[in-house]
Length: 349
Image (cartoon, helix red, strand yellow):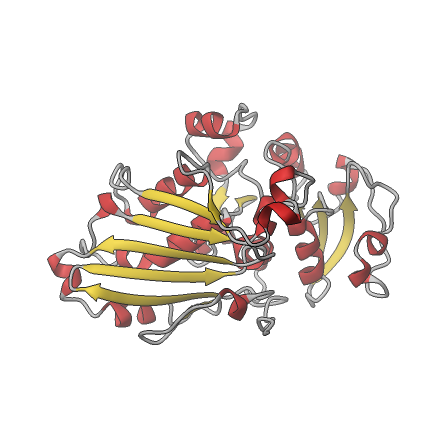
């Protein structure tokens, strides 16, 4: 049984971790911390847990966290790196759902997050936790940087093309048009997130620059082995008036080799053994509601022009885009069946 602690259990990714871990046959939720809600019963904050979880939030106590086998940080950026080294030294695995262990480039981390990284040596040893692509490294990792939600859709949407062994697409002109439900902004009080500001409204944000852009570029460089090839990538996120769900539409130009390749077959073969990546039949329409509450990511391909490929990717931003993928990583780290605790069917309608 894996003894689990969660730091920051009051946010949306925190409650998703709780929900999923309580249904995990090999995980025991031992400790939940909250800076502001210490002493409060978890079920008093989240009534859906009444009769299921009899645990109260506690203050962050590093000594208590050391009694766990793994600690998830569902906290703002900058928190996990304060405690990760001490936990690792005590033999505890760390999975961070924020950005502390995503970017290896310290200058870009400083620029986009406005803070200095205080454990750069541990960062070098950490593993980027995109389960399907980094499985072997994750098996031996002490620290996992859980990918951002948008970057997950982009990487899994492009990976078969980048791993094909030949240049199937033009790397310098990729366009990512991505949409997310409002839960992606976290559980906080903010004027831009209130109901009347988002209902019956649809808007782009971060058009001039978004912190997931450098993460996407760095990750695509690592997948393809092509440093600097993705500097021309355009990424524009949008806020959709729904609670959860994410849909990314990726536009790429095909090379001559790409036009001669059976791309549907390429994607199907690449993901044929992946439990949580569904390559849909040609001309399918991935919908966010088909993955709501589930750890599945669905991909569909379209070729409207001989030299143009459109890749549509749908996922639940809180599950495969965050907490579900974190648990998938935990399963890999502890040698468990990767699907344990994650075989939930999407909620429809």
